[in-house]
Length: 134
Image (cartoon, rainbow, N blue to C red):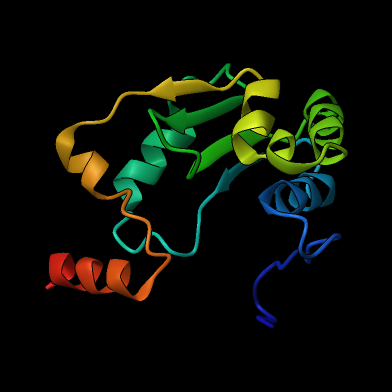
């Protein structure tokens, strides 16, 4: 718990990232959201600002080939699309399917920017990331 921070609980724990995304979008309607995975230690402010600011008319923006981080507008249409995806099973309820349902656009990345998108899900990935950080 972080009393000084807005924390949105997942309304359906264990149902995957679409559940968390839908929970946040419902809690913050009409907001532009930047969603970041907790296991991406190399992200810097400039890259996230680029994600937040480029393609201002798009409902959903991500970097080429990466599901996260993403920017999504929590509009009524977005909530309907996310709810539809959430009701599906298996891969049909994926983050990629959710992004496609709201017409995601992709931003290109430089080699240096792409290096920031290392995802650390395993101890070996974390060890690799630590090597990059030092």
